[in-house]
Length: 147
Image (cartoon, rainbow, N blue to C red; front, side, top):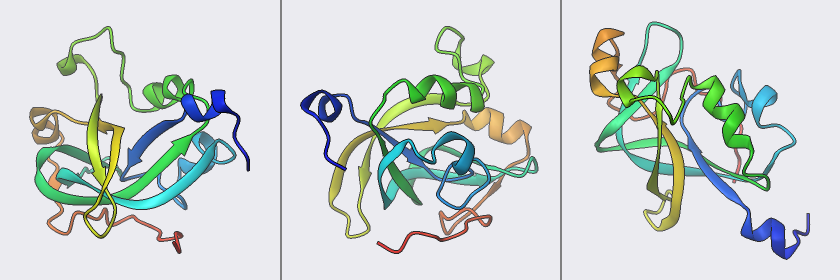
């Protein structure tokens, strides 16, 4: 796929670590056909398994394994915000997740730049009785990336 200059400027990077990863339950509905590039990646935080059937990432220092998805259309954020129950007009505590830009790395530890990620406040993780995933890889992961 060849991108125009405008498409290149409007590219949007999102780091995903749960149900939005390729092969997971929400990828097809929200990302398929909209992603122009995907690659395995690492962000730093803490990853928790929630009893709700999906993970949550908080800020922290542990490597969290996921995928960096690149979208040609930045308006995808409104759909992702809805999925993640995030409204930028609400306080962080009033959202299930909040969206923040953080640095993302490839598997060799080299920076891939800044990307959006959906994080959960640690207090919210505690309310949901989240269980820390020391490996940084959500147990529901279906590894479909070969690159």
